[in-house]
Image 1 (cartoon, one colour):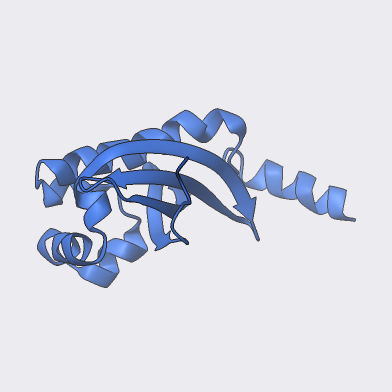
Image 2 (tube, helix red, strand yellow):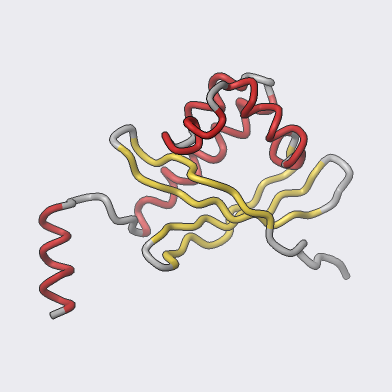
Length: 134
């Protein structure tokens, strides 16, 4: 029964599920948004957010204020390393290791959704800090 349901969904929603081939596209969206943040171009950064996130914040300025105060490591990352892309409960998550300007490492999980405009960021959660050292 599960195989039939999966087959039906794949015929109805072709291309909506992520695959390993989507990794570079997802990484590109996250990287492009970070580049926009580095330039304080909140209008462009806002375009990488999903419709739900854009609706929640309303304007690029409010979105930018939330990022600069709540996610400073995303606003000004010194180093970004993409870790695993995985599906959890039907949702796609990209884990990212970020080193901020002071050298502190942060692990974040980006929830990604595919829209008619391609992959977009549907939320970010900060995970327990990475343990890096000798």
